[in-house]
Length: 303
Image (cartoon, rainbow, N blue to C red; front, top):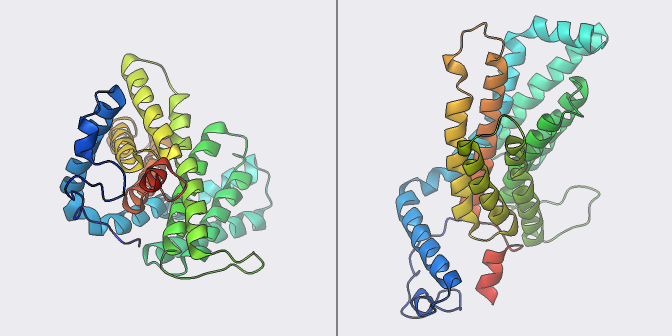
């Protein structure tokens, strides 16, 4: 996991540790932007202090949450094996022998790759395997053209890319047949791609369901946070905001445990619940690693 940077050395007299103007200097600037920057800096300091005890555990928690939807899906296939076979055969018109093979491949791939990611072993192959599962299920279940499924799984892939960029911090790896890239280059490209893909779940949330004052407010806050994540401006702060919004939304809307076992929407709510947990895991990795070099936050350190 990426090295966790503490807050020590953050206040060095009147000189910023990144070579720019200090926060004390910023307060002398009466512009609204300076005031906003001062307030967000205070919030970041408070969040850093508050999250210090759990920082060492963020990478492990993030990795587990990213793959939890795959583990739940594997368990669901096993416990609903006959229903899955009937659906694939009668509705998808897939041959009987192929349906068994399809489900076996999915269960084995999701279980083994998830365990590898949690254990930080062969993360590159494990991430590739889970991305392959997402594509295979989209084709097998006929969900390729389902916009909600597409957006959600783009976000899940974003979380998986964050795992990939994080694993490249620790060891050198060049996939066969691809140009050899410096470890640092690979990390920043995949961090950028992961950041961009992570926000697609929220886009799906905005365009789904009935509108209300509460929904409009949450959508506006989330939209601002998503833009900040993509451009890498106060990325850690905005990622934490998205984690809070998605977590509260998940508990309120996708509370599958309150539904009757035979409720028609129970499986859908359960599926949505664990998928959102996966995106939350990707955002936690973003909080831990930072936005990377392709970001406004990183450019501010240089200029």
